[in-house]
Length: 288
Image (cartoon, rainbow, N blue to C red; front, side):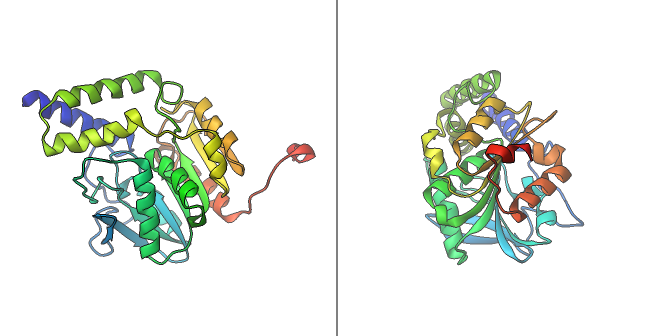
């Protein structure tokens, strides 16, 4: 039992760090006294496809959906929400089985979550929106654009991958995740163990998106990664090359947390991408 608790604590810490938290699973006060992800003044639940999805809305204007990474929550975007809420209606969501969106079912897939976001947008009577996705949230953003293309005006993703192996994920980290998942399978299957294993299963066995399927992403897309990201930069380039209307942005001296370490630059570049019309560069235009 003690070993199981230690493993769970270690895994939770790992997922927290991977998702960009500041060494704690507790929400941290961001702009002023607002605690994003635990704001009782604006926080709401929507009955979505068999569970209650927690979300918070800030600002006014064109809608913009934020999707966090594995084991994360709305609070991961504490550096983005106040910036974009000045000009957009920001919809920040806790994904199924994460944050305050509790789901005790055994299964969890990226496709399931993408359909969850579509259902939430329908419930909010939004026909389309801009989407920002980080890590697993980037995968969800791609699948949302593929499965419900009418819902995504423009998409910005950072640290996303198409498949789960060492050509996509840094080899040492991927092998550690596989080993941790195997160890968790042998541990006492408490509710907490099962919840953590659902999240690890996502990274070990999913996603499974082919480069050919990326052609289904019809919206302009900004594909982002760090040159030292846990997602191999070559893989990030493959994603950008497969999407018909895409830009590629690889940040130097950056890991997986580009929107934390380079928050101001990230906000400005992503904001400009959403404001400016997509420009296809070919032929002599490449000189510009």
